[in-house]
Amino acid sequence: MSNLQTEDQKVFDAIEKEKRRQVEGLELIPSENYVSGPVLECLGSVLTNKYSEGYSGKRYYGGCENVDTVETLAIERAKSLFNAEHVNVQPLSGAPANIAVYSAVLKEHDTVIGMDLSHGGHLTHGHPVTWMAKLFNFPRYKTKKDTGEIDYEEMEELAIKHNPKLLLVGYSAYSRDIDYERVQAIADKVGAITMADIAHIAGLIAAGEMNNPVPIFDIVTTTTHKTLRGPRGGMIMCKEKYAKKIDKAVFPGLQGGPHENNIAAKAVAFLEDSKPEYKQYALQVKKNAKQMQKKFKEKGYEIMFKGTENHLLLIDVTNKGITGSQAQEALDDAGITLNKNMIPDDQRSPMDPSGIRLGTPAITTRGMKEAEMDKIVDWIDRVITNIDDHELHKTIKEEVKEMCLNFPVPGIKI
Ligand code: DSN
Image (cartoon, rainbow, N blue to C red; front, side):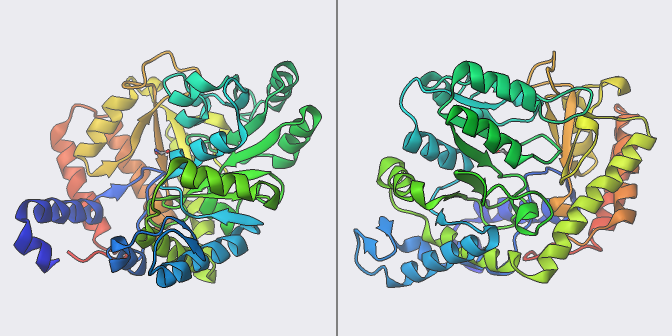
């Protein structure tokens, strides 16, 4: 980035420091990952210069022949990865993708049944602080304490009581799979449209490591930068029946020109996701999460939802005498990045909740396996059980760095 260095030393320095942070530290935020060199190249390409409102072959701007090629590639590759009838790759990210779906199929005051935020749902699934919650009615179901499963009985009761237009599943802090057939059957009973937000687990689904809602559900949204390991962005997949409504809702309904540099990066990521190495990666993401679960359990940690079937773990740290934010801050000092998180029906505040959320997508991209998971859990436990020992945190930061330097990050040289 010599051009940038000459032009703007301050931004250059910040990016250099971030590179170092990403390479020398352990990235355990379950929604983050490292993209490949080719994906990064697309993001920094000349496609960022181009306006292309509309869709391939039907644009409002001239000179779109090359962006048509990349957008069509992204769509065709996504269709084949997920077995989708129709794909829109233009949503700028996950929240805009969800809002586009709501605007495509709902009218003001319609009812959407989604998952409670503290049980793992997402803000855009009806949390009262969102704009969507002012427009639509969102009764929310929870998970079952005894099994950790989604409470499908409660979902059905709510559906019968509220007659929703949309029945929504998906999550950002839940660690189990979803029975999409069962949800579809509930929706069929009340005539609801089904929607799944698979942002966190899309990569595991594409690799065949988790249930795939796309052939079953009416509409599926995702981000492309989490387990899918593509650029920051969103995508909507749907049955042909909803294709026109969804496309119109994205453009011109909500967005202007699509970000074609980003769409090219999506196309490249989807190609990477179709390779045998990626299937191995997705399998290892799950194995690593299971290994962490085993080690945390041995050390007396309280794992929510009775364990993990995906890439993440939600852990209540109350029995360790600390809060989620204390854990996050102390671990930051030790070069280990995860996030504080609410646990089901948390009595504490979102800024200082009872839990931590961590996951394996990024560290697995670096090639870490079960042996490294054991070390990582040991470090986390040493920090948590010595929360005020800043000297120890510094020592662990050095140990973390030493191990991390043996596991290169794709696309980054320091
Ligand atoms: N912000 C994402 C996450 O961290 O899970 C969800 O959108």
